[in-house]
Image 1 (tube, helix red, strand yellow):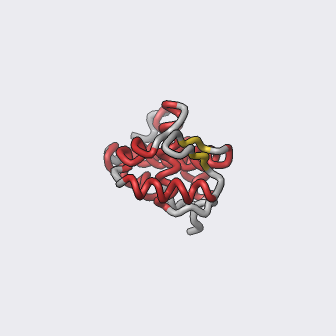
Image 2 (image 1 turned 90 degrees about the vertical axis):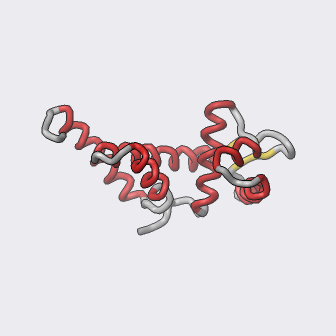
Length: 136
């Protein structure tokens, strides 16, 4: 299975996803918020910030706010959409929310574009079948 189209590691994808979540909520993210959210130490966040900055996916003001670039935002949106779709898919199949989150978080980093489309189609079909009381 081909890795996500971005060349980011699973870890960097988690960081950019967290940054996106904070940016949507607050308009920016900060090292401390990301560290607490991901349950990691500040040096780990600083290292990730430097790597994402080198890839031109974020802009970081020293000791200040972190903002996603347009390209960073596109990648983050793709990761978040994939995550949400996978969680919804597993929940539609009857998995608990906790299990759906666990599997969604793991698979969002390895699923390829073709399989993402298949999952989206399956979600649509299962919802349709549920509305028609064909799927329970």
